[in-house]
Image (cartoon, rainbow, N blue to C red):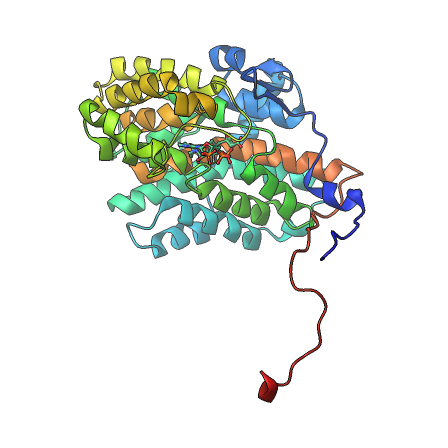
Length: 389
Ligand code: SDX
């Protein structure tokens, strides 16, 4: 009889928190940032404006939005040590490994990194991370294809600048397709924050030790990398490629129902209804394919969804498409290699991670993250000398 240790409930609650940032109703499929419905933000706002909303708590007026854009654009260039670090990786190194390393390395480049109690220092660290993560993505891609780096063009929007820095042919007159830049901006809005998911809880947990935000964000990025979390968008594309043809969908569904695999991009810890983000992304996917070329994998995804939504196995388990089900198809249409899909989740989520980190630091009730356990191991016993074992 191990007896469940009696423990102070306060200990168990270090993993929980009170928050004013994002509201989710998993049964109704509701998602709101600072009270604004995600549907309205996706239609009317921009990613940078939503990042401001998350961090400062309300929509900016024109003066503040211009100020915010100027703050971020002054931080899009990366330190030469990061350029050298990116070039030290093999050309085919997974970009999430590069991002985890580069953001962690940022904690060694800025001497004030340890000073998390100074609001002015925190704000500058936030500008720097939001400004530089797209540049790290672009440089990692250019290193992968063996082409020179395109310096950031701060006359472009946040997402257009990313597309420009990644452009394949290094054309001087490269024109970013506005439909594609807008589609990426909507995707970034939808990925910006999502309450206490695995990677955000990691950001808060690591940050609760009062380490610098670069080290915390590097840990959060590692959590997001997992195929059950942000890595799912990459896994969905590989699943669709593996299915290969619409006529193979029924067999694939049968294998999933036998437990021989998962329908990646379906299911959610919180949403037991259609992920509101997936509805918007599905619409964006059709708009993007009108502006680019149709993708046979979209037909497979639509058929997978059609069958799964009617099938008792998925209905009984409340499995619906989540944010990752259609997003990879759009990234592929924008020309991103599959390995970059989780990176495209991390770039916008940086704003959410940093907002949650700020809220955690300012919460007087928040102690260092220290969940307890229920001990089920061996009862107390005496050491046994080697010759008696
Ligand atoms: C994200 O938390 C967040 O907010 C995350 C996120 C964010 O914005 O930060 O929304 C982003 O991570 C979205 C999720 C992306 N992951 C995937 O698409 C991977 C595939 N999905 C699953 O692995 C799963 O649905 C999870 C991990 C998302 C949720 O897992 P849960 O809630 O622990 O589900 P579960 O394992 O308790 O499932 C209950 C049942 C099980 O079957 P039984 O054992 O009861 O028979 O549903 C089954 C599971 O086997 N199941 C699936 C399934 N997901 C769950 N069966 C087939 N395919 C799936 N995708």
